Image (cartoon, rainbow, N blue to C red; front, side, top):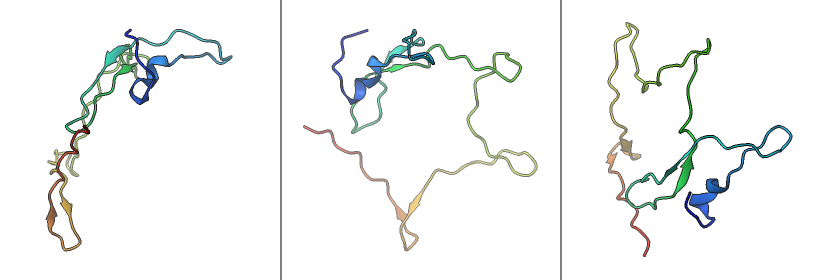
Amino acid sequence: MADYAAGIGSMNFYYQRSDEDNNPIANPASTDNDSDPGEGWSNLNFLDFNAGYVRYDVNNNVAPAPQPYQRHDENNNPIATPPYVRYDEDNNIVPNPPPIPNSP
């Protein structure tokens, strides 16, 4: 792991798990991540602790990955979900604001 300065984006690099008696124990598997949050925002380095996560069902079998949410009608037919549109008080469409510019 690289030597990171303490800050908002690096807070979880100093995370230490503890047991019920507050004794330090090994942290779960993790990977370095610096996901891009989108235009106009700064990338933050962090540890992704989901690296070793395995999902199980109620019978302790490995469960399949969750699927994205899909609405269905009363006959179980999929319903297409339109994109979100903002409206003002006169019911006019409000365009999305431009991205926040990067600070100098």
